Length: 233
Image 1 (tube, rainbow, N blue to C red):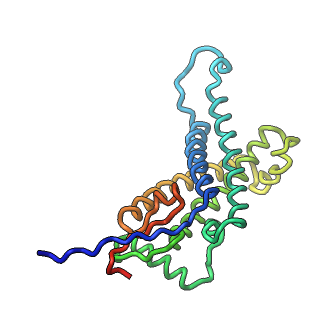
Image 2 (cartoon, rainbow, N blue to C red):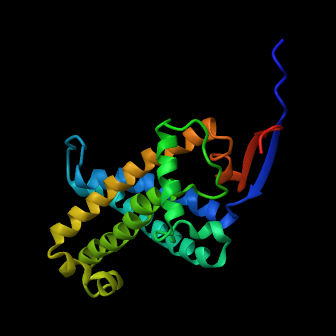
Image 3 (cartoon, rainbow, N blue to C red):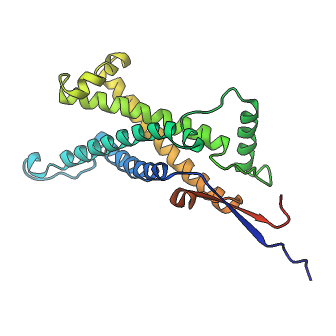
């Protein structure tokens, strides 16, 4: 008979506090809504409707949903920045990355090889692993700020430069050169966020089922669960 496997030991660490988890799921809903409505604004796919456009107001509802989601997304990100200062050490990983650390870059390379199945056993991290931290910063944090700035600049252009959005964000359009350039960067940011969603979902399921630590359930309960066999260190 084959030797019996030692029992699996479970260890849990509280990682993501309630404000972080709430922000995460609110941002997920906002991002999906913004991507869908933003694409429809740039590429309307509606069939021809009889009568006056004002009688249907389809694009008006799409634009309103886009603007409302943009407000929520921006306010949520401001709250997340506040909690990065007030929360635990893992709340800061979204905004502060140790670019000057050789050990951190070595871990980024190791995790890249792990995701490509070039190493058999992953390293365990309580918070985000270094590669995830780098990808989140490049494909989420930076594009999110870009989307908020360019989005409110375009919103202020429509509302008028005397509006609060025009007064606060009107300088962005001259900075980019012209309104169409701001539209292009805003559109590019949407694709960056869409790529991030696909990478993030893949990585979450990859880690949940192949690595000995929880990922999906952690953003619900806040606890990172590590699964080790009795003989493991």
